[in-house]
Length: 303
Image 1 (cartoon, rainbow, N blue to C red):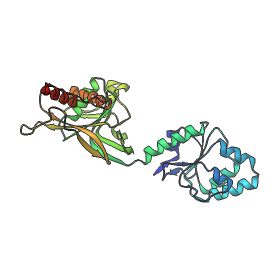
Image 2 (tube, rainbow, N blue to C red):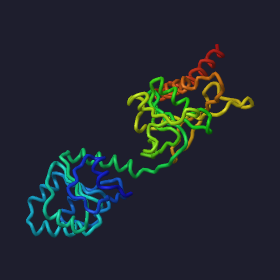
Image 3 (cartoon, rainbow, N blue to C red):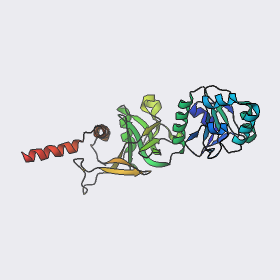
Image 4 (tube, helix red, strand yellow):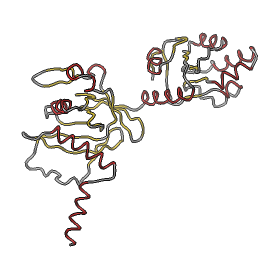
């Protein structure tokens, strides 16, 4: 993944000391602190990772002589490192600058504590390199639960989302949802930059939800915890009335709990989705209403 130096610095709140070729070529979400390389051990050097020099590395650097530093930097930059980040407000050594300029390797500096910088870089790179897919639907933050609303075109997804916004919930994305797999169990959804915070309402056109309802009506990204599939009511189809049959939808190999919501005139879908979000929170707390009801019926029959 190639990211511009400016974007890399902006996302991580770094200072660009030297821009190099103008891009950072990131292949791995891990980082490397090259203390062993400073000491001369280059076997199994993880050069493809972002290199971070902290207090330990810079203190060691100040203890050795000039010729030693030049030789170590010459070997260090003979590898294709993506970039170097120097923390705790240290100034980049002259030997490092000279070799970085020869190889056009970007150098960043920050006043931040090394451990915190390491955490922030890893989190950012995990998002940047995460597997992703675009899906048609609407993503809402409903009472803190990321609700991914899907269904056929014109079934009423956007109208339902607009009613949820009016009821105080937050829009993440309408029409196209960009989904990233952050880890084995977590999906993060956001909107394409072009359509961010915009919503299409048939008969009305494109509206800007943030401008109409304020900054509290939108959110940039949200983890997806539940899927609501809307479909036209089918009189010949038997729908779940108890909630015993749990369904899932798989996105990027992650199973998300799904509810099938039949649509017909007179049903207030926004309220039903609100209830669904609260119900899944109850399940996470260990209370399953349908199972509780089943046990109650069984106990009643025994009596």
